[in-house]
Length: 630
Image (spheres, rainbow, N blue to C red):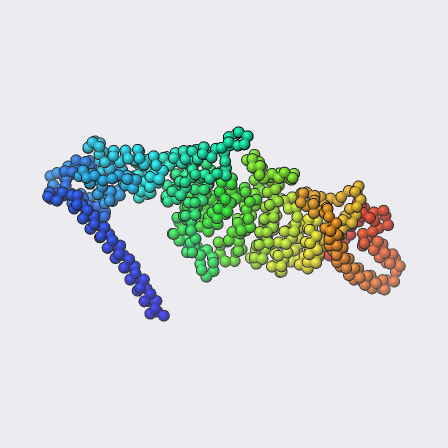
């Protein structure tokens, strides 16, 4: 085994040495080819009298052509006139040997083409070598500046290419304002293209009014792909300039999404393959991704819905995984919270990147998002989008969003409930994050709590009661109520409450023939929306018969349960009666049976429909039953 490891290490070392040798060979070939090119344009019949030394090669040249154009070389030669200098070092020349080769050709009067790929190098090299109008007319500096102003700044693609060249020429390129001029040109060009594209989308409607066709494809954002090749610091400056120029937030958002998709990749080095837990020390390779995430978050437009909410959740996952700043994560949570009603369950399932022993999903982050959603103000900006209004609904847009988020939250609770490491306190905090009026039906919450009780069977009765207090059993559907009435995982007090409310519901359904009788308060939630009120009053007889059949089955099951309870109670009372042999006890037993109103009938006129007196009597019964169970 040790021999195999030694052989592998030897092979790795050999591969590293071979790659290093290849790099050295490539450098030597480049140096040799550059020297061969130099011999082609340097005067062969006149021996060289000065050697220019720099990183990447040496140049054997002549003093006179260089001194006539370069003020820096002229000063160096003049300082060493007595010693007849023959070697000059220019190790800090921007652009290295490639830039100096072009500058030397210009000194020798050899024609070459100035392009967007070398104009930045020529500007920096001419500034370093002092090739200005002071030493020669139409010098390299003025030629490069003229090309930059007249050619490059008129074309967006050329400006982007110049910025790519400036990445290796900073900070001199910034001092010469090459970067700022290209950025301003890009922003102006994008703004002009956007205006032209907007005009092309204008059209006349059937009524003769001029309006913009939003379905037509916008051709003014073709620059988005070009900007994705920039380094993150330069990209940040370009986007900031565009926002100042008034470029559409939608275009800015599309550019940010495109840039993030290219720069952010999945890094397997962040994970420990054995346990899928986060490594304490983030590798240096993730520093770039962290900078990209923080930069993109800082560049996000303030307007809502300009980027997909899925993209915001992706940024948030990356920010948590890369341990970005707290301000970055809080900003993302606030943005997500303001439009949480359009999120999906997959968006909320943010993995936990903490150590082992923690929950599978990051519930703390989701809780902060829910708090942001609940605390958002109903500003006028939220009222501008008319699409959120429903023509047949009396609710405001914020109420509609509450209904959507409550359903999303219940599904999220059901998804995280099986986690064995999820504490009861965290589950309760997440479930109670929304106001009480957010849920019109508690079926989803009941399902999530039932899953949690099934996965955490070691809970005490007190903890179970805390969980079940979250459920409003009046807001359970018939199917959920039937399930809860037979659910052994629920506390006995909760089961009694379910049976009680189911009895009241059955009474009201049986006594609904009287039109003048008032409806009880516990049914007001069923008519809060058009869909639910339609479910309460079916138009066809078939649906009505099916509903009555389900209610009768439920009532039959409930009667069987209560009959068993009465039989057990009768046995106990009979035993006590045999001991006491008192008629007073029998009379009290008959009174108690009369108060139970077991079949929902009484000697009063309220036998056909529920009344306030019977409602108060049932309330007393349920309180006594709950007290006895406690």
